[in-house]
Length: 118
Image (cartoon, rainbow, N blue to C red; front, side):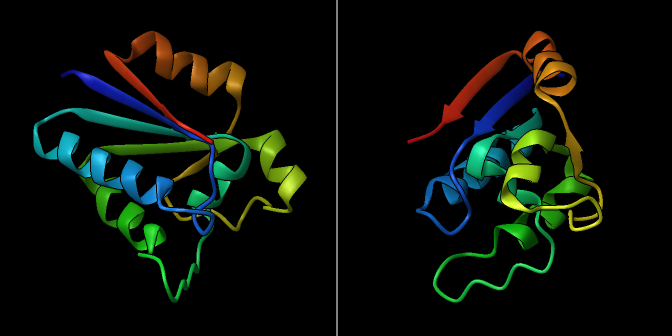
């Protein structure tokens, strides 16, 4: 199976970048790709459970819906600590990990990579 890697570096409520990443992930899953998303910087907000946005789509709910379809989501632990996102606050099935272990594995094993950042 081919794998698409998406690195997201903007937060869920900053702009529509995360929503675009989720639409890309959904399209790739529908075409039979494995999809791995790595959140870095503000992108760690992707895994925060109990999101309740009023004016943006709920990417937390979208993440939960795609996890059983083959989506893997990992975010940077150092970036989480810097932003006050603690272990136990992540959506079940997502992971707080590291650049060294997780992003490097995603890149090495992935067939395509897209970075979404500002």
